[in-house]
Amino acid sequence: MSDKPWFGPKRVGVGIRPQTWQGWAVTLLPAIVILVIALLLGR
Image 1 (cartoon, rainbow, N blue to C red):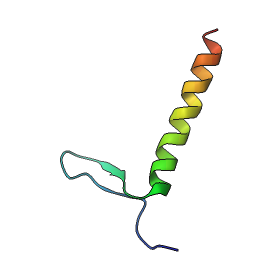
Image 2: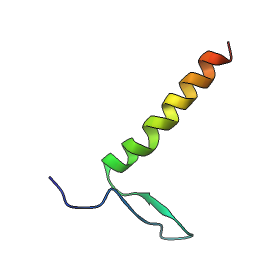
Image 3: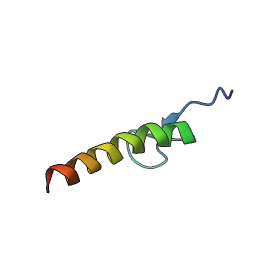
Image 4: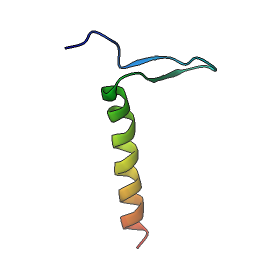
């Protein structure tokens, strides 16, 4: 298991960004869930 942090500082701007696949999963999974719910409620 890697000790690399999932998120790290952005190169430009303020904030953090995903650095590993786990960070991207934590970022994209809730976005996909919200999108699916919005599409289902919009019917």
